[in-house]
Length: 465
Image (cartoon, rainbow, N blue to C red; front, top):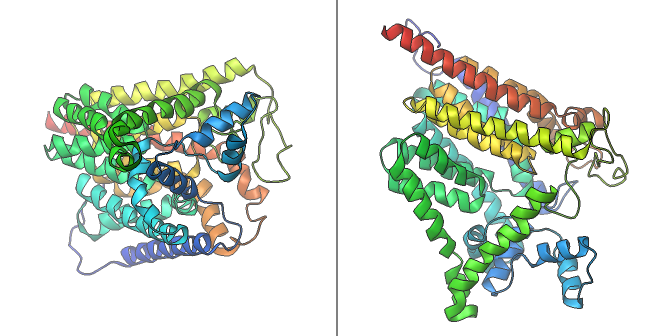
């Protein structure tokens, strides 16, 4: 733990000012990325928000928000498509792979035209970023300019690569972790009803936070777990108001059927075949254990998603049987998940241990997931903020360094200098991602977080004797 200074300083130190400049540069770069995406300039990825907009429109029209997914699975199985299905496949470039509740949350934006809806959605990302930072400051008891500045440095500079991808794609991770952080804050303040409901809403935006019910039960926070479970049931009804106009009395049944479709067309194919789209997405940029192991050892694994490089295939090292690769991926991820739950139980009397454990559970599940893209690395903010709140300021900053080096620095250089260049992500930039260095960095951050918090607990127990 950092030793307190002998004399309190007045004003802002040069270090705080320098960190403030770094934060400002990161925000300016995010504004630059946003402008490029929304103006259609440069070599920017087509936003995932297209899928959200299409799904929300289909919901309002009483249609099937997972129709494109079903067409894709049918075509992949070699089944004949009807003319209507062919048109659905043609007109839906992106697949919607989220629970129905999120389409309901996004639906108000469909009253705007597409361009206006995108502007509002991207501007809301800055609000989500501010909300996440606010919730973490309160959750981790961060006080004073130095601690709060350190949090913002970790969030906007250390995790810049994740934020850049989040803004570029119009993703939802900032919303999910703002909900999770504020939900945990309510629970820490002994407000289990709003806390459980916010965690439930997070699970209805992306399903992984549902596992926090198990963590809450292990920590004997039963009322919060109960209200999270109640919220998960209640939020199944979120599509109903949008369906009444087209489905009438059948709106409730249609909402339930949508959730069944979500499991059938999104969750089960991801678990059984490792794909949520037409091809297995094990290529560079996917940091899941399955993807990294496939690139290293999977025969015929597509290594790059860029045009002209789809025929570049693995393995990078040598071939292992597909079953062995799958077993290694599942064993590592589920072992980390079980270990995180155990730590959550062990640390149940420690505020910062509870916060870190929640983050570790979600990271473990992201590793087990088919997809772990750069924007999912936002999940590291919970354990990093917990270390910062526990009083390990310098160590928290150093802990963010591996991610900053292998993910954020290349992203920042790319965004600042060559965002317009189709070959911006050169082999030098792609090399660490290809070989899974971000995955190793994430695992290292998690391991050192556990070591630091255990060491702090031991020193506190020894000091109490």
